[in-house]
Figure 1 (cartoon, one colour):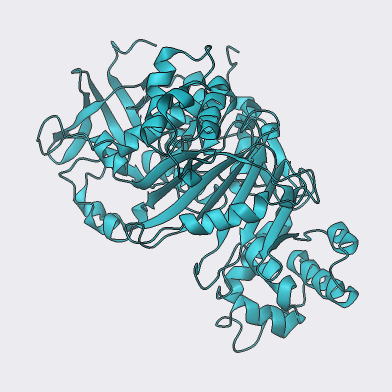
Figure 2 (cartoon, one colour):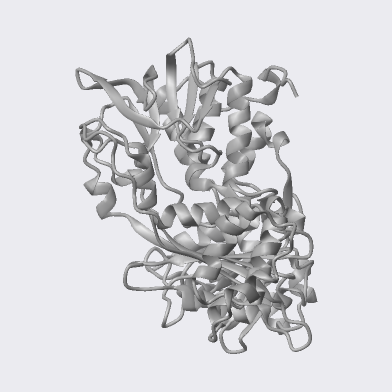
Length: 546
């Protein structure tokens, strides 16, 4: 589409193409609303972006650059680029053995390992900065070259997540037909890290898994089977939930008191199956376990689905496609300058090239909000999550002992040095995350203060446990580390912004997309009457040109 539109009046303007706002855009267009969908970035995804190798390095460079100054110091000005950059800290990419290189290697030696097929532009833009660090090795340069030559084969997810098979998002994708624009793979393998043995142990999630697991004593198998049956049984013995202390006891206490589940089995249930810390309340831990068990076996042996070609960004594009099918208008790479106001109400937006668009409702993100609107309550309650991407030349040997090694979720229980769970999601080329024979391992954990505390050493320790093998260890090609801010609009003071501006949250640190779909649905009903159906069945959809 052209960047200049003749028709500039819409029912709703949606700003940003991340997951939440793209679901909102698709659902509003599906309901008959006239939608304009804008993004200051050239690519889809916004805060949920998926990058190929080159765009990943461009992203790192962008985040390390000085935040852009606002073009005009006006009360209603938008400075998206600067705000977006401030939501990340400690961003860096390392290649091969770069971080371990002690002796300097002269530049000519390093350049001698660069094939003649690599363009001068790529050498200047992507390889020379690595050489300029003074810590590059031939292995590091070779890793950069390999990444450049295979750039389009990478789909590196900045916010990796999974879909519960019985979750709200899956239900929406199936009901509406949006799911037909995507491909999925079942996550059948789950592991929990055992600190004593230093190994990843497979979590039994089904009857079959329990009985083939040779490391679980028979008496413990019976306890676990009794508990798992209890979680899915509609006619469960409710007396197990009664008692004066059920509502206040921890989940660990509940498992031990009601089912005699202790030790490694208890850790597997609490940390892997319910995705919780040991101090989680019993009702909350049980609810999470029930949700997991209800998803087991629907589309495979596991409870989760993984989107091919990236998670949130791929789902975002599917909803954007639905929006376009129903008449939504798209403009990417359009920098926004300010909001237009009339008597305290927002009437639209103006771009930096002077285009003005009007709408009754504006759906926007925190980074797009004007500086005139007080966001102190949101910022005061913001948290941080530390993330890492580890790309290796083969799937981690620790996870290749069982399962198909191509796709798995692992959990590192809390320790004295890290009081929170560390999530570990491993993908191979079967999910289109990386080139053939390689693997991408994503790690993330909360970080209360990234300015003074780093989780990088914890991630590196986990990675070494994953890649080690006496006969054939995996080798790290490159690593990406960053801290990402998490802000929720639950803490937004609505009295500080116009009533017709509807704001979505940042991606959270949960394993799944459920909070995102629920928030999108809530934003949808802020723009339409409650009698309007959210993403109705597929048969109501017009023909797609493709």
